Amino acid sequence: MRSKIVVLFLLASTLLFVYFSAYVVDETEQVVVTQFGKVVGASKTEPGLYFKIPFIQITTYFPKNLLRWDGDPGQIPTLEKTYLWVDTFARWRIIDPIKFFQTVNNTVRALGILDDILDPAVRNFITSYRLIEAVRKSNRELGLLEFGLEDKDLDTALPTSFSVSTGREKITEEIEKQAQPKLKPFGIELVDVKIKRINYVEPVRESAYKRMIAERKQIAEKFRSEGKGEARKKLGDKEKDLKQITSKAYRKAQELKGKADAEAVRIYAGAYGIDPDFYSFIKTLDIYRSALGKDTTLVLSTDSEFFKYLKGYSAKQRKAP
Image (cartoon, rainbow, N blue to C red):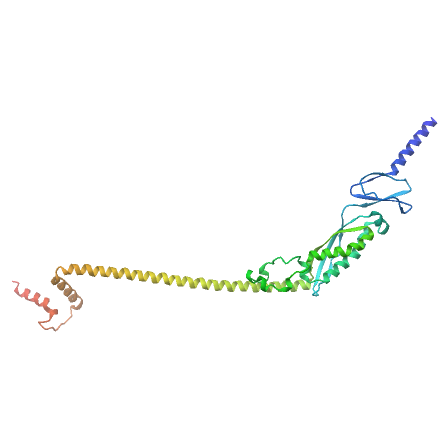
């Protein structure tokens, strides 16, 4: 009976020893083993099952994946003394757990160190460059409406103040290069630094909005004046075309009328040429009809050519029974 108790005790002790000595490292973790506050062996960065001396050695876990740092947004003046509201962020990771444990010990303190290194670096670089350098990354063509220019005027009329020589992307690269050596002694690698947001401070923003409104009004007025000029040109062309069409139509009508009159004269001449006396008689009657009325009084010689048909008519009337 006593031997069974001893065996069970030894078995339980072995199980407890194994339980407290074994530890697991996950894919997203890395472990530093310490004994009485001093690091023992190399850090465990590969996932798997490991063992330590229980109750004497202590395991400290650190994340192996990318970690996030968010800078404190603040007002930073550019080279032109224009204040901007700048908000930055970064991604970092622990590449040397032993150094990290010995110098920083935890991620909370690491974030404080990042604040002390990255915030001044961001401020120094923003203040060293113009506003356009912090906002843009290349000389990609801006919308021409921003300047009220035509395509042909872009190369000659674009303000030189909008030319980018460094750019936002290179500025962030320089911030990263400056901060990386300072973080290496802490076992930290700075993976990336980016500017999350850039905006004007309130007074500058209001001034910028007013300037933008004035520019848009100027561009709109330019378009309106160009539109009015184009409309007047179209109306002038319309009037010109209308007069040309009317003139051609009138000339055509006169030509047709002249041809018709000539044809009528030819027909009349042909008809009256068959009997000239009859033609003379008809034309004289037409003159009588238009010249003589009820109350018309004529004093004519009996030898008058105008009176010959009336005289002949009177003679016939006298001979009639």
